Length: 233
Image (cartoon, rainbow, N blue to C red; front, side, top):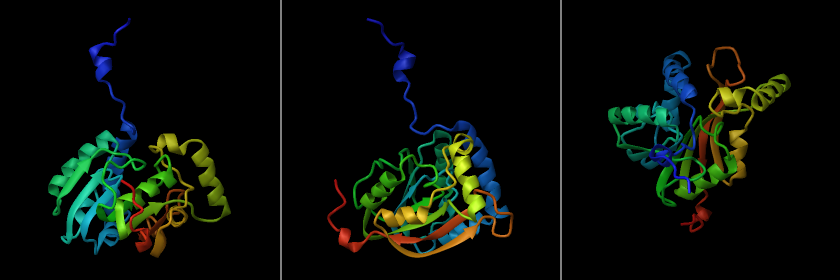
């Protein structure tokens, strides 16, 4: 019988592993806070939240500085190791308690109905299974709890839609850490059974040229109160 070496026996593959993209994203996202106005978007995204919050796909933790003091705890899930390390550093600087942990959106390692709010910030573009991820969001959120979302996706006219779909079939996902340009996050939330509240469509940057990744939406949705008792174990 052939034995594996101790090194190979210890090797565990991360479910999400995009080290080159993670380094690029860490640099560019920080610059975009001021240049593209994303810091203001994050403040609008998180304003008024309270109680226990789970943030799915926390990246390098740029949201953490914008959580209001009414939030008692943030559980921040980030599967990419390099980004998660940066998120841990950001958590130490946050004004609210933030616990950063590994985990993918499609299988959140937390109890059902344990959170008052879920934050989705530029994450639905890159999850492997959007319906399954949103089913998990619905499971971990208490009935009546809210989803705050800031996502990018399909937008523009017919030519832009065609360009987004073409990029999704070819270069964009492998270059951009699994990101997709032509998804519709608002439709996905509706199809997952959430009650949509007010939302706003915008381009980022708002006064710059419209690129395939520029079309965003910022808004709120709720898990229906009638979901009580249906969250699973």
